[in-house]
Image (cartoon, rainbow, N blue to C red; front, side, top):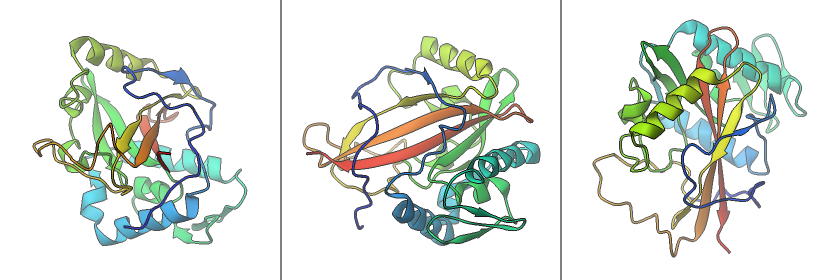
Length: 243
């Protein structure tokens, strides 16, 4: 596919960073608009239109939690230059108009560059109850939806029992209006934003830590929704050439 790249990544990337590696984030800092906005949003719209079953999933998320996400996104974009917010539709900075009718999480994901994964507390653990994941980095939404944090991170070697407990405590402790963030960084041979990979698939040779032509980094934010108490995992994807 055609390259959709940012000119730079606005933070110093660290390869092989330990989990969870969390830092405080500005209240609205989880919604980022960068120089790849128009191209990434066009690709998001294409994926949602052409393969909706591969980029959107819902395992019984509460309507209140999804409404909470859209309300927060609307509150942020209404204050950002380039957005025209109406009662029934929003026109984005790329001049594409998004109808506000429909699944609230899916509508929210068409307004901003971030992929959105909604986690709700069910019993003792947070479960991924709904998600819009247009730009997966070597995983698939279908294999994660409806699963708790431990099962979601099963393929991650460094996600042991101690880390799992720390991450669950982290989800429990996130405060309203005080989001947190971390980043990852990997080298890829291909620039594809939609880069799914099954847990059972053999090693992905499009990813090569030594010779990758591109650096891919996810700005990963954790945000407590104020009304429902759900935790939103918002992922902003950067891809730049590895020079």
